[in-house]
Amino acid sequence: MPFRTSVQPYESARALAQGHLAVLPTETVYGLGALATSATAVGRIFTTKNRPADHPLIAHVLTDEAATAWARNVPPFARSLMNEFWPGPMTLVFSRSSRAADFITGGQDSVAVRVPGSPITRDVLQELCSFRDDPFSAIAAPSANRFGGVSPTTAQHAIEEIGDRLTTDDVVLDAGPCAIGIESTIVDCTADRPRILRPGKVTAEDVAHATGMQLGGSSQVRAPGMLAAHYSPRASVLLVEAAELPEQAVPSGAGLIAPSGVPTPPRLVRLSKPATTEEYAADLYRALREADSLQLSTVVVVPPSGAGLADAVRDRLTRAAHA
Ligand code: TXA
Ligand code: MG
Image (cartoon, rainbow, N blue to C red; front, side, top):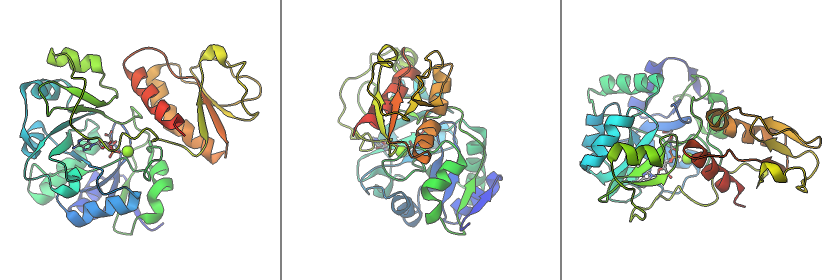
């Protein structure tokens, strides 16, 4: 194994402070972290993931105060969101301060910041701030998959994606499976009202409720990661309604991901049967990965119904199904 595996947040923080990479768990998905103020370290994120250089990264910080230091203007409605949902699975986009260099923002005038909620991620941030004697230290971290692939929700999945590109100075922190399992909600806070750029566990309804505002419908902000075809396994993903399942002409031996109430037709291989929408989100990327490791050519997916988190799951499924 070319890299080091650890369960000590301290080890990851030291590697980050020294300019190396760290694979980190968060409550959403595993990230590939680098010190957000090091052009060289951040540059390695892009080469490791094969990510285009103009795709901006999220800066993860310990506190609201640190997040504010990365922003130039924090409107009152964003304060309400910070109070309500941070630390947690929500990323806010602000106009950037001078801390946010072009290599983080993809050259845009905005920066994405998140105060993560997972205790182990917070421990790493805390240690990093002490190492550097800077309470506003940030970790730039995209999901730890190769560009366009499925986000990892375990350390093992991250290693399968990018392990061969890590070095002996890089550290993988293993804290078991991520609790939420899909990426953070991204809210653009650069206009006069909030706008959702990527749905997640914090829902549009949550954002409207916390801010007392109607959400904006269009934004000048570019979110280049939000490509139609994204989050894709190698297998082709076929979305069907439960009622259509018996009639669907699907190849024998295809995989099936569906809520637990949906029975498995004899010719399909059941990959996941979540009992709730939360379970659906938490198990989805593992199940898509299993389809690939079983070398299935097709995965049939019955999406979860309802609003909120189910919307976010359907968003990822639609992207995964986009050929
Ligand atoms: O849950 C998450 O957000 C995970 C964990 C590791 O924190 N991170 C994550 O990062 O999903 P990534 O890079 O895979 O997705 C970040 C998304 C991309 O679609 C990117 O385009 C968008 O955030 N983004 C970053 N900075 C932005 C900015 N300044 N304006 C608009 N979108 C931005
Ligand atoms: Mg990603």
